[in-house]
Image: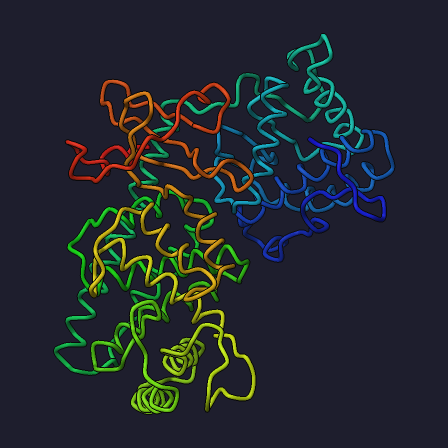
Length: 489
């Protein structure tokens, strides 16, 4: 762990002071919530210990803060033991695999490095563990993790009430298979969303009214907002694959997911992320009953007065169908701002000052255009993901918010997940993971399309510096279906 400190001299542990989750202290312990809290606390204690020392007051204060919550929670576990196991990118607490957000996953990666250096894959903390025993464990762990010492591993360490499971913290074959099943679950949720939205659109057409049940779709998007936390690469790989024929339904779902992804990256609350996704869904329902959905990149637009009148007409048409909730408010906002310049001095009713579109309007404009480019809808020629990225980048600051374009590019990469490529070594591959934002955006992780050697190559790693992406390849040129490889990644 790298040494960092705040301006006041206190350690920057990457998180606020650990707080016991509100759900704990009840009769039933939420192991997901407690597990995330426990890993965060362990990370923070180790961080403090690495910056100062195991015997420093700051370390002891962190332990004293943690122990009451630990003892309160461990009493609610039948076995009286809290066990932590790390396997590759997975972490489980008392046998339950945790769903970690991106920042939490980064902390887990640091813990994985320490566990790997100490040659342990699991720890069991007994209810009778004392602060002194935890200090003793931290000291032994730091010594084992310090590669400069002669003593390797922790096989020689014996501490009362703390049991160690020795070995490499790597995934077993069965755990890898479980990860594949999780990818298939994500695919199931996505396809279910496509089917439900398509059925909903058919009902809208039959009734010629936007007043149709949306509860199932809302729950699906809520699930997707949770999956964006740690399964975003899987989700992003599904969107450009056109698993169903491109139409307004698939465009509606994809736009919702892209918009939710950007909202999540901006740090908006999970419920707000789901609201934004539902707004995209409703916007296309409104389109089916004759209320316009503007595309700033393609529509020539009306003059200022006629544009405003058209927007007000569509808002008035919507009013009888609105429920006064957050999603309804966002629907009105998007319709009101349809066709307005992203950032420009304009006449009435926006003549008073230079005006920016609302954040949600800017997100939706960018995400709609990107998906239209991928699917080849509404007059756009279907493009590969990398060419779609080039297209929106060329219009950053003009049609689209340049900051959101940068966020989209850093999230999807110059070669988005699902892009099929040919390497300079001659192999063909599919992009399965985008580079870290601080790494070279042209060097993602790819899986070779050779069934006899379907290995993963992270082009950002030093051992592969002699290999680059030579060009993108159309799916039709691949000779086999990249989705089969991607979903088994």
